[in-house]
Image (cartoon, rainbow, N blue to C red):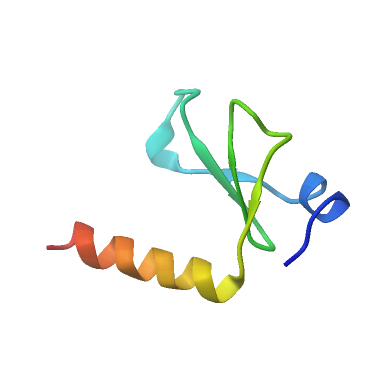
Amino acid sequence: MRSGKAFRMANWRKSSYSEDSSDCVEVGRGVGIRDSKAPATHLPVSGEAWSAFLRDVTRVTQQ
């Protein structure tokens, strides 16, 4: 997992479902998760953990 400068320079993305809302979670390469209202803080996770999270969310939302 990376931290520090790598996360500050990440290309953070916000879900298109968020539209103009400021209550968002953003995701960047590497993988880091942050709250768009507090961009200085982030949660680094492994690519494997992020993939598992997305797989589980997709499975639950398709039920």
